[in-house]
Image (cartoon, helix red, strand yellow):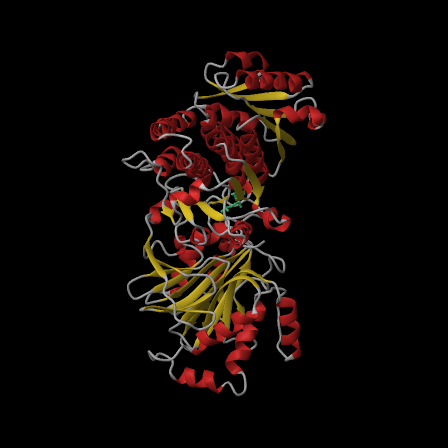
Length: 640
Ligand code: F6R
């Protein structure tokens, strides 16, 4: 949510920041802006709407000069916005400046006490132009740097560039951060300090990219991956002073701290469309490879499931008597699937909860509770806050995450990375499959740690899981008719999705994908619940997608779903049935039959989800919509 890039180096800051914003646009696309410091000036250009509007503005001429060409300088920053405070207008677009136009600020997050700060600033004679919470920071910095009697800052300013003194801009940022509540990543430039960019973070992402003679600050590594793969994690409540030759990091109390260096294990091509017209199509097609990567090397030579980071002992895991899963959106659906596997394999009670609700209802947690936090980005604030709450209550936290260096894994006791590579399409696809596979591994891990499954039993499950990438590839090879069907339904008003057992979360996910991509009314229900109310929605011609469980699993469940299909069909529904190859019992009741390969019951979501992703994507395209950047959404939701 909001993409941020800061740059200090030897290249054109405009080119570098624009390139970074192109890779960050999936984080928000309500407006975009850039600031560059050079030749004694701070220049800012910002526009409402997508990045292309900013690019157009930079190509325009003003006073006979091309706007972008006047932005010469090798220090700069850029922002792509997902609006929180104030609508998506030019005035509310970042960067925001102070009264003197010397300081520019970009921000991701929400400054919760901005109303009080705004009144204080108005009282002191500052003029604030926007409706944003962010603008107060520029004016607070102005007040700090220009405060009468700020002798300390003046002395520090004299030492600017020297090794000993803390940079005055850094010190001012530190003091301002102490006054802010809420969540924020800030990046700050000052006209008079062209060699430094300062960043700060609290509960919102910020990573450093370390290049040769250049340094980057960004919301995620995608922003600088074309320039360097050397990154540095910045902890909570820390400030980073970036210069060409590296960084200095302090905490909000002013104490020096070290960042954790890491190497990004994917390159710029992973974040390109690779010949596909949309990232989403590319990401759907990558799923066999992604699943194989998630599963690779998970079984040690002695038959134990391997997590990526484990700061808990075997005894800690054995002592667990209850599992909570917290996540949002698509990740929550992966969690619902995990519940079936975890309860079945471990015999531990497992509750799945939307992270945004979790901490507010005061859940019963203690040191024998395991909280599994699932998050692609590792930065979703609702999930992060649930993790923090769990840890305050002494619960253990295991994170399932796709993003190395992100906050949720750092705040957790154990981590399993999904290794899906960057997901640029705003709607989650490949990372959902990675999350489901990771959840299954966590279930096996816990069953093994608790002595419920033996090594050879776990090994047998893992072997079956490792056959899944081939089955996913086979499923992708047969979705052509799904595309045709989706196009034929472009005019539908509503689509219902039904499922049972692990097919129920798949139905929820199918409905979510359709809502967010095609802007259609879609709802997922447990098939058995239909008769308790939702069946009233069924009328002549309403498409109803039914995810049918395997007849080889629990035959009773299969037969009940077949009855549910008949119930909706009898009321005029157009039935779209997703069923296992060889399941002939469904044939008479399916207006459209989509086949998926046979799998063990708990693994079925790894194949049944695929046609639903393709269905939503194709239907949205048939309605002329942008499937990579659906309206009102952003990839990483860093506000509560
Ligand atoms: C839907 C989607 C969202 C995310 C949710 C959680 O396609 O992408 O519902 O799943 O915002 O995001 P993460 O997994 O980053 O915590």
